[in-house]
Length: 307
Image (cartoon, rainbow, N blue to C red):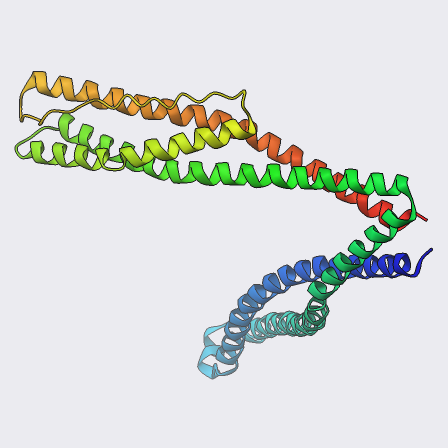
């Protein structure tokens, strides 16, 4: 085993230890939050029990005459027991919380070294890669294969993320258009004096982002073809041309309703197509991440075990 190989193994073991500490730290932080909330509850209960005990202790002879002899003492004893129980639980929680905070402080100091160690391992892996390439042609071939696979999957994942980002932009525009169409439809259906201005205004706002939406949609289609040439997306938008809306005209009402519904249906059709495509892409994305993790693990194992 080379010195470089030994250093790499030791660093990875140290990294795994720190990662376990981080996981434990997360669990500890969750427990701390729960116990801090519980402490607040018991703090209120402790104050209440203390008040109850004080109130009973202050009761005078008049109270004794009105009650059966011994009733006050029994009640006082019960209240004192409740107070002691609350006090014990409060104290236990307080001590537990202090201990967890102390432990978390120590763990946080250990976590600070994680980034430094990760950088160190990255450098050692590069050096080990060079060492293997120079030592054996078979190892050199394996290293080249693994590197090419890693680059391939990283590139694929990057393109998928870009595609999703493009659709997010398009979806915001589509949602805006659809909302304004819905607003126009509402004013047509509930037509009254002054509705004409509201309908025309809503339709005008619906038209404004339409051109930009079409441009983004074409960009999405282009990016999709680069990754999956076999996938087809129909980007044609049937957005009707609207004349000025006329108040209280039945035929105009009916025509506008039909045009708005048709335009909205066209937009929703595109949205449904993209959602199906994205669902398939999500599966591809997960598969690629799994393959990448597997390749990285095999690559690391080669660097650690090859002699």
